[in-house]
Amino acid sequence: MTDKKATLTVDGIDKSIEFPVYSGTLGQDVIDVRGLTAEGMFTYDPGFVSTAACESSITFIDGQKGVLLHRGYPIDQLAKSSNYIELCYLLLFGELPSDEEYDKFAQLISNHTMVHEQIVNFFKGFRRDAHPMAILCGVVGGLAAFYHDNLNITNEKERYVSAVRLIAKMPTLAAMCHKYNIGQPFMYPRNDLSYGENFLYMMFGNPCEEYKINPVFAKAMDTIFMLHADHEQNASTSTVRLAGSTGANPFACISAGIAALWGPAHGGANEAVLAMLDEIGEESEENIQRFIDKAKDKEDPFKLMGFGHRVYRNFDPRAKVMKETCDEVLEQLGMADDPQLKIAKRLEQIALEDEYFIERKLYPNVDFYSGIILKAIGIPTNMFTVIFAMSRTIGWISHWNEMIAGGHRIGRPRQLYTGHPQRDYPAK
Image (cartoon, rainbow, N blue to C red; front, side):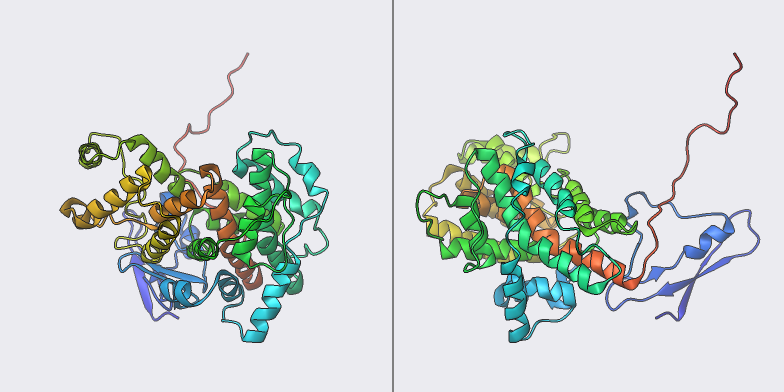
């Protein structure tokens, strides 16, 4: 794994310090600095942007080249040829399932979509106008009170049961958050529907009439789930791992991940796209150009949301797939004349043609297109991050399972202390 070393020299210390250098399957080499504490020092890395806090074989990202691999498979190939349930199996177990394994796994997910009936009472404790993410965060954490029969995290079988429960019940809970928010009765899941179909049925169905599921919408939802399933060691995944390192139960860990995802700098990007389109307001060419100029002005706080990406310094590999899905949904709905969507399409065209955006690689990202799709389907903006959380659950639980199975230490970041030195309490 290593045949290289890094040497550190520090002013005031006579001897140099050597560290092993490790190479992964792909990506940059890493310097193992664990021996630094024995020398009375540790590294300073705000945000952990230059620190590998774990080993993982689940997802690989090359932001410079625009590459996203799940267990080695490119995301565009998976989105084209696979589906969300198969991707869940792949992330959880490391290999694609056989036909028999897939059928068994899909049936198992379907059989666990219902939630304990008393969870309905849990919902009644929230205000009707509570944000769906606030409800989801609380209810998922509370699942440990209802499903405490398989919480021995050292037991592989029990970890698997918890993983299946979380994957299966998240669409049900997400739809319940929406129904509670708008004052409609909860819809029970149906085992004859696919994962995406079931979610749409529970979101938009009602007991008064038959709900017909649009296959284009169901396919779009499945694509959204796939493209948000995992994204390596991001803030929410790292939160799940840190919480899990204490030995906390999986429901508590996923609830912690949901809380981290709720932050507008992380999971709220597709919602921010719609807010931006609302701010632009008028679809005239002059008005759109005015906002483009504002985005280029360093002194102006306005930002074009949904363009560029913190990780990808090239085109977001998920965006091309999401754009195709977006076009399919809009064509199905005949929404070419929708003013807000006209603004979005014009912004997309400008970003792909304007030298300012091309030079800076500010291309439309996955959040730009997913926000438009969700709005077109009729999903309210306060549910966007809930859907993100539902999609990302498989990534979170896969990383949690990998960490527990592989052995781990409790997370304990250090700090650069800049407060007062020791001082005596004043005498009275």
